[in-house]
Length: 85
Image 1 (spheres, rainbow, N blue to C red):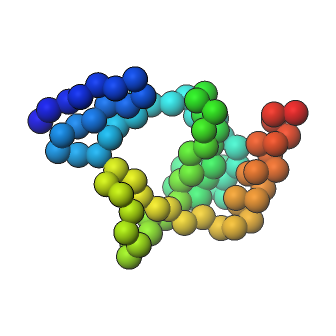
Image 2: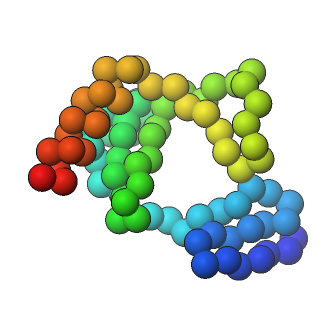
């Protein structure tokens, strides 16, 4: 295995890019966190989404699609906007 370091992420030659772990803060969850759809914000001004893995749609190596309820995403957006105010 060969590793290549970059300013933003670590590339593993036989796998997808691996980003340094961000500090995550819960925004909203359908069950309070754990094994259900959840949205987090990070210390890198990004958003993490936990949901069910989706297959059958081609995405680039190192990326994946997850599915969450529409209302969860809308409520997460409202809460993120409120936190920024």
